[in-house]
Figure 1 (tube, helix red, strand yellow):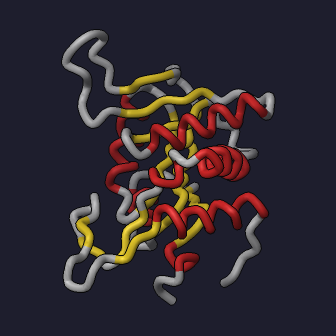
Figure 2: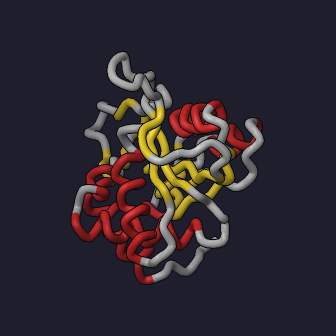
Length: 191
């Protein structure tokens, strides 16, 4: 099924293809965070640190969060940090501020010893974001931390879904609203 992209989405997809999408050299597959391997890799951070890419990511993420009633947006560091930053800046620019946070793999062993950094208040309605979903394990760590902090995960949102089981994982954990701006098919992979 082909869908029509907004102008911002179309340009973001171009940047992701140019800056973030890579094919592995023959016989040297990429190792994914999920533990699997793949002949292609999408490093969303390469687009998220580009001036136009950061701007577009913020705008596109907010467009996809519209109407969800979220108080905060964030996810697992490192991937969610630039996405969160872009989204909160865009929310300020639009005059509808949304707080930001990110989750550490483990609590700090110094200072405040927090696992969640940023403005996540208990009782918040949260969107967890990530650059790429494969099986969803990284984002699930953020979901669990947010829930443990007393907030509700309203939805999870990725720039790209590799269509390898993330939606099913989130559904098993009680999250029905799973969104992706793009899928791997938008990169010419799969049918």
